[in-house]
Image: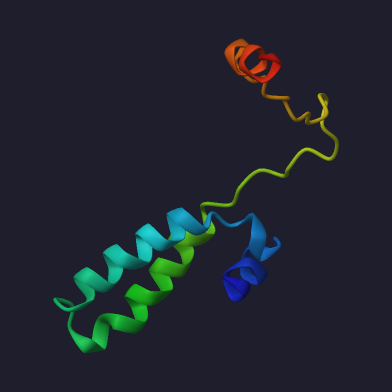
Length: 83
């Protein structure tokens, strides 16, 4: 991922890991059927394909801050505690 990111001139974290993983799994499945002499060319094609899946830049600031919701207990628990 690092060398592919360097080739695409983006940080490696901007390359979709899940998509790259799917492409690599498919490649290794088909690599058993490829002649050994063609593997370097196919690996170069795989690197080009992965470089196409660069993710967009993330937002620098959230427009809505995150908040934790407070879970309320059911009313019956409060009534039982009073008795």
